Length: 228
Image (cartoon, rainbow, N blue to C red; front, top):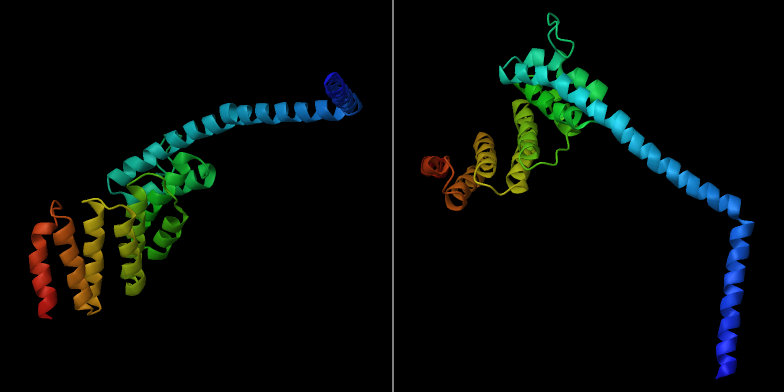
């Protein structure tokens, strides 16, 4: 029994000794690794505090004026800025995207640019910027998908439009955006004379979203679809 204990002690001492020898032999390497980790951590902290945060602040200031133009329905100024403005932040959404595209405001500017291009009738550009947007909130990704559908249907790409509207309806099953997206899909189905599928969209709105403002109008659309 005592021999076993002594052997374990000897093994432990041997292991510790080997560990100490390894550390002593590789001390410079280990110190270098630790120092490198510290440098990386400090660099990340420095980037966040002295680069990312100031850039986010500047992006928010830059997009503010553009969003005012958007709210007023001045889509061209929202996109390109107001050349007569004396405000040093009076730039357009495209400039915000170009300069601050990696910031939260810069990413949101892509979604707003898609809206502007859609309203200006520049449908390929609307699709371009809608395709670049990858929002994480609950509402804007759904609307962004419907923007794609609107741009496609305006160009006569009805099948593509239906796919976008159907996807938007499934992205968030709520009584506001889902029935609206289904309604758009139903209207396009009517346009391409797929009346049974149109009636199915309208019936889904009536059955699944009775609280929607669209629900009360669906009987007329269902009757119309079935009469064709």
